[in-house]
Length: 230
Image 1 (cartoon, rainbow, N blue to C red):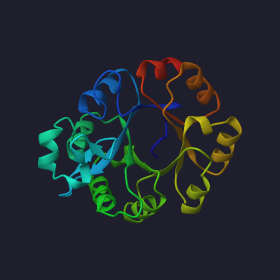
Image 2 (cartoon, one colour):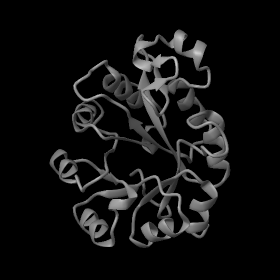
Image 3 (tube, rainbow, N blue to C red):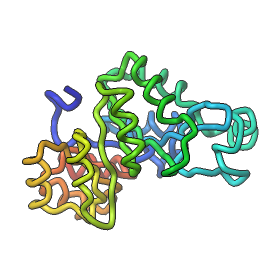
Image 4 (tube, helix red, strand yellow):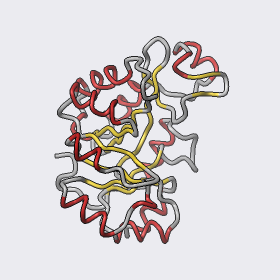
């Protein structure tokens, strides 16, 4: 089990340690882990020629990632790592957890779901990774292709956890403003692990931890560690 025998809550660096290094880079992930966090959250995009890369936004200043080849992307944004390089980085850090956010455009299919499922199913560290997305269709397809990898549904603005229930997913990832003690209890009763994001205010961190969430993602490793009493 992904979360078995681990202290709660789990603490993840949101895009690594983005206030200490450029977000979604190996340096950012290393600093998050060196600070004592349990793992990181990162974001998957796909280039025109099928390379999975790690970047939060759909575009770099020079254009949309899905419209650029990897060579073109690397020429203008060499800081954007390939996902296979990130997985190799985590192979040397066997205790670290990874929450992969699958970035997708609903209705636009470019093979990123299939590519991610194939890569993670083959990866030797797959027991410590889970995938989340705002796109329920992408999650449903990923669940078909990689049934052994846990999946979480991201949502904000209102409680959309019904989608997770209908799809039989493992986790819900509500924005922290949606987290209340009653909702966390209900989500737990329904069998979900609860992860929330991005929590940066010290008082808000203590609140969501007191409300019983299982995973907290934030931008400041030292604040996460302090709020959890580590």
